[in-house]
Length: 516
Image (tube, rainbow, N blue to C red; front, side):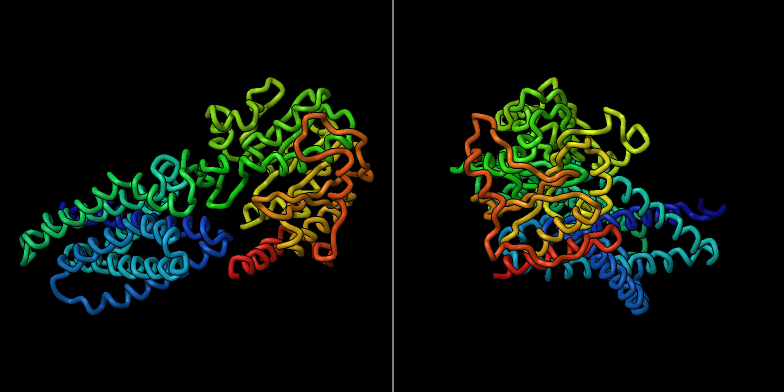
């Protein structure tokens, strides 16, 4: 709390420190989130952006020594620049990704550096203004206290409230407005000291007006950027604490994108999901208890329910927004045949790694803890948070949840494009004692795609498949397990939780495709 005798103007400045700190961290988090959406590898993106931002703050702090006179005027100008650059940062990067993807990285780090430099100027100037009336020991403690409190507030609100409710573009513009109002507040607080009062007030109002216009038109900005990026008409666009979910509709039907990455296309998703589910389900013979990890769109569940022997399906999906959309939206529910409404299906919205660890009996021997078939349908390992679901630690937990005669099946990646990544997954599963049966299928939207069946007993070719399949048949199924020379097995390392080598291998192999 401010010390006794501190003027109201100083209290107002300390409150401004709270807002300034919150806004600065918000821009940093928004840049990191966007970079991870577009560039992948969230650890790398957040690390480099935080490093760039902190370095830029150091540059700004060093530059503050050259501001000697008219400190309040300099402070409010800096606030307006932060408001403008930081506020439009998410919108600018969204548009750059759609219309000038080659410039995205340069623009990203350039804007982060500019905002960081300006943020580095803010606090020293506030401290020098306050120094006129507050003792040094009180000054430092008060400024840093409010600075840290502001950072804490926004770090909690960003993933839990701001992004899910407002989206990145609106959130950036809202916090830009907060910076601009701090500047307007500074105009009133220092009205006796400012030489060009009307010009400063006009500049504040102009920036506020611009940001308000952006806030009103945020949906149009988002649509303008995403329509260009996705090509087809966007019918659903929403952000959850975990990802950005976009569904488009065009000549080839609906498509689902998570963080800009295609997850399925209506015209050929049946190929992917039939290949994912039926080799394991049919080989078991009469599976009763089935679990699906990931696959919140319900397509895998749709295929599983084609087996009359199935008594229960437990769908473990991290993001409740996904399961809610594919349960409640009539168009999306039609795609999965209303599978998520089946009385046999239980939806559990939690992290699959944690769910595997929470078996109810020692060794997971209780009937409710083990499954005849486990279908693992996660996105590709583009970052470490997903990469942990492809490690030997994860597969060891998966093994404990399989019944003695059970099968697990895992979607991997393309054994043609990302050959080493694919065989790394196979090697990792075998490292925990599971026997594997690797196979692949051609899905036009993805190209040649890979899967792995794993179990404690050798996989056996099923004698029959459900009658209404559009892609697989008992006669052609053996062809999926034959790998041509350019997809044949390579030596590969085990992907461990401690190193997550798969994420780097995956990024390197798919990066070559993007580069060409």
